Image (cartoon, rainbow, N blue to C red):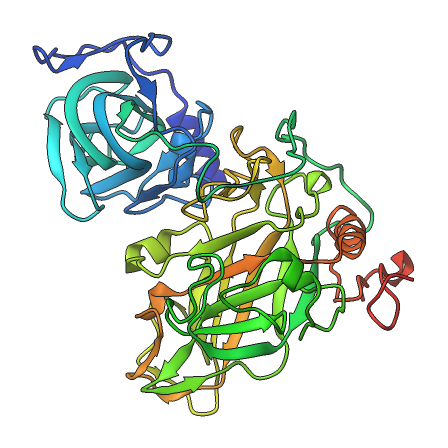
Length: 472
């Protein structure tokens, strides 16, 4: 529910923009309507990962400016400068950029490109912007493209309905070949659900179940997703769930292995970088909580994972801004009363634990069980709806980890680096009927379930599994 001030702000931002009177920059800038064709180039930015310097509120994320939906928007904080960047997935030659401003626009801005997301080259600048829809003819190259606002046209922030980048990828991504693992059968013909489930009595407040899993293998420099069949090639990992996970892991080896999860049917391999205090490894004690939730508004549309689906969540090369602004970020690192730390705190009260929660993407392309970057087949929902190129809603995993370390934390770090390098891997090997039962009963059914699929607050709904955590 929006406050009255938020409602007034939204109404203000929806006012009809006055007729556009822009100065054309010869050879560089053309103002055209939103339906203009781009026959000579390809829209590269839609559905790609986006990052922003800030967001106005939870309803105006960076991803909303590259979702192909002109009714959603990115909104920034009310200060200068601010930026919005999109990762095209590979080096591209950029030929044009279209900015579809809301009423809160940039009167001065630059379009910049970068090969690595750190060093930027300005390929276009404007100092007399008037908002509306601007299509800019540009010339540049890079993997990352951003609009960098230096002066706001109003007293509010920057607000973009759409940020469209057109051009040609130097090496277009394949859909099959080395590094791609195809789903068999693929899931096709799915249209992302935009429905809102009806109200229930009692109200539906959760749609989740827990997988409670202990550490199964420690301090192993293997990663069967990123470095398959290359033992020792990775930084140290802490493994949970399946007890056999190593560099040679396959779906078949996981399915025939044991598990440190309380549910015997969960033979999934979960792993994350090892936490170190100096040179000493710190392992989570006891069963950790791995939530399986709905990441979309229509929780009824969530389907179980296909067997063998695998992906990486987060990145060991993330910057602190990447980590803080990631759609998967929840509250950063916590200890005691301190939260929203985007790196490991310098000190934690004696006797407390270091906690982290991080959410995975929950929209699948329906075609690939893995891709060369171990991410492109998965996407985060945008405002609770899966994008059209990743239309299949699957469970959203949320790691909730706790490490027994406190006091002076200056030497505490992950084997992958600083706190913001935290990431984790998932290799699905659930017993299919068990996962289907928990997904249907708890996620689709709108319940807050324990590992048995039992909702303590709605006991009349029963449980999906028996007292031994297996199907009855």
